[in-house]
Image (cartoon, rainbow, N blue to C red; front, side):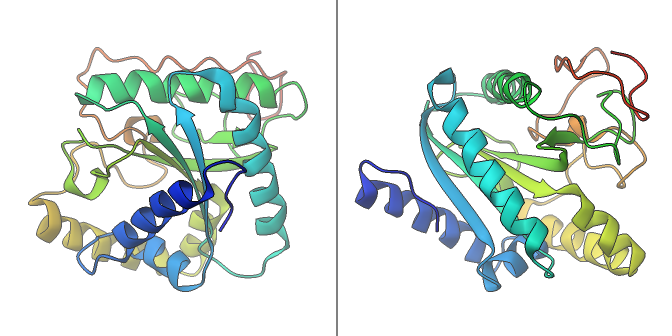
Length: 235
């Protein structure tokens, strides 16, 4: 597992807690369990989610993850950015910090790389996906105050899942089977299916990132600053 310099014992304890969270036999996401079984879950521990201090370290971690993932023939790779704090008191608090960090990471990444041309850079588009180093990611947020039991973890977490993995699963018809299993397991684990969970590719995935149940007035605050590309005609 990837751990930064510093309090290595404390960081490893947090990583171990996260891996145990995934290992829980009732945890609904079987893709995460597959990544765990293949030892393809990578983690980094950073400090406060509201602070930009660790943004460069997060990007370097993700860049290394992307390089390794692109060289691997296997499915089910995932990268977790785990923050030591703050304590989350409600979903709105986490939601605001999630978009704050993603905006900051995007702006740093845009200085070096374009946007993944396989997806749309418009957060309103059903083909949108968040891009780092020209690699699209589907993001899942975890925190203590989540209304979804499957997203309740002791620390704030941003989980980066390579978007192309979902496309590969769809080609092999495994995606629909996995989706059905996950939703059935989520009903058992949480009592219901996440109301924000839409079928892949039908609506923008931004509604699923934080786990918050948005109302109709919500607008995604993410502003993409990349130059034009074929899937993003607007600068």
